[in-house]
Image (cartoon, rainbow, N blue to C red; front, side, top):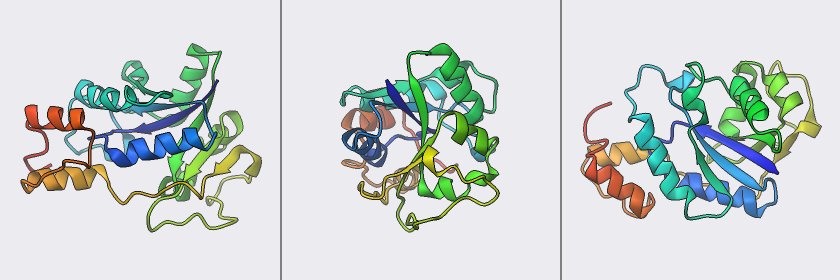
Length: 201
């Protein structure tokens, strides 16, 4: 079972996330995509985040609507902050029947050399990279300082791009604007019922 791990804070999860995940499945790049909800993203320390269980509940609302998508709280029990290499290794030990790989956007691929253990991630798990608006995947691009292991990377240039971001959703909410159609209807219900993203971060 080829399982792509799509990590993030998902604060909140939106239609761009689900579009990427479902496109990866349709492209045959993975049999499953796991939304790996991060309890504490090392790159986002200092920003007040929505409680992890609520972010997980929102991710589950999305995953339940598409076969092959799974919302996971696996990182909740790991040491914090969460680092991708440690998470992938722990997943491999916990689920030996699955072949885990990492799913990231082109923006993160450009910074991949700054991650903890980038060559170990490539060697042990491989990476699937999807395009991001304004950050085209140039042919032959390779992250600085990382050994070239091109056979361990799959570039998905032809899947749709989405300009939407979680920070945009939060901004719209702070400004009192409607986010209908930008998030799953059940996610919107949770956002409204818990009065999320209405104050400054």
